[in-house]
Amino acid sequence: MKPRVIIGTVAIVIFTSLLMWNFGNSIGSYVGFEDAELSGNRVHVIGKWVQDKPHGFDNERMVFTFYMQDETGEVRRVSYNRPKPNNFEDAESLVVVGTMRNGVLFSDDMLVKCPSKYNDASNLEISMN
Image (cartoon, rainbow, N blue to C red; front, side):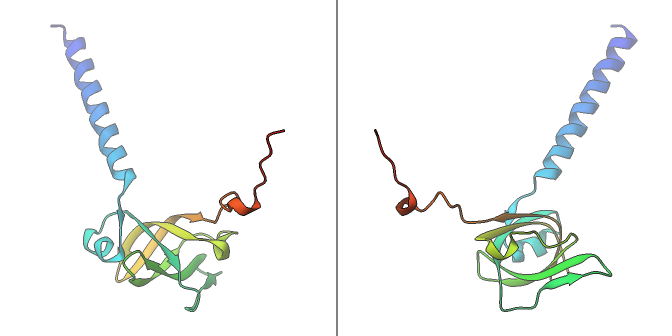
């Protein structure tokens, strides 16, 4: 076999391996706060905003902090390194992506799931004319 073919094949295998490893790390997993604390990895936590706890945006650190209750009922502080999303108060649920450190979820990404205006069947009038 020619050395160019061997080098090309090795390069393709290394590139494919790195691509798959990077993709696997970026996916994350859906867990609760307790599992997020134990894993130490980047995770997705699904929950709801706890409205009666303090929340707000710190202009000096450029961080929005709030408390969230996960699906198991555990409440933890979330430190989101971006401004508060526009529809945050209307959210049905939140998916917060980040890592847990010292009991706080440090997040760099958040998905706000709002109720859909199309879910209420009583508002729909369907006519077949």
